[in-house]
Image 1 (spheres, rainbow over the protein chains, first blue to last red):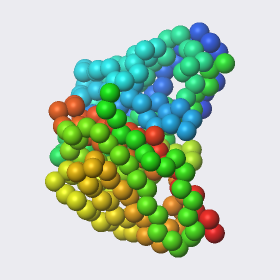
Image 2: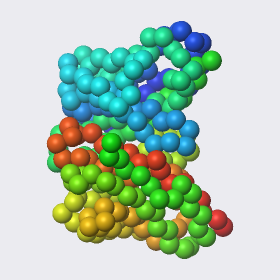
Image 3: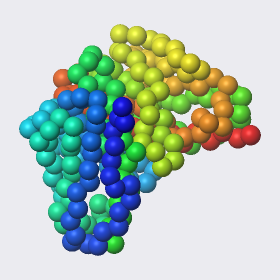
Length: 113
Length: 113
């Protein structure tokens, strides 16, 4: 299993541009999450999904959108990039067993200038 | 709102010594806790977890202690090695919170040779 994969690893955007951060997991996990991590800070939840076709807002959803058309994929969309969205973005997934461990991807480092 | 926080942002230890990383939480409904390790440029990696009906759990060189009376947990790393240098996060699951983890800010562990 590759686990959770994210693309791209790095990206530089100009203000106002849009992009999609890709996330795929091959563990057949129902739950998927998007976090952002600012320098020296913890993880803040942007959006999450409890299964295909179901998404919900997390703590910091403004400026982002998500979709979950399949179990495997959970892309994160930035429509009008702003400097405040400069961050490292992590995708994670979790199965439906009794524990709450989330499995994380390697992250995407995004800079908006 | 209630959140998970860490006491020490940076901890420096000598190689071979034991490390103790602390975490405070404030939500009485927290029923599960995880410690994650994040190396530079990588996603968080699961270390150990503990449920709220336990006081202690041991893994390989790591022990987590949970004190529900004062809402405090700690991660103890025995015989700290250079490879233990990383940022350590505690995260909590709040019962009824929808399978979402709340992360603390993190503690940077530096192992000195």
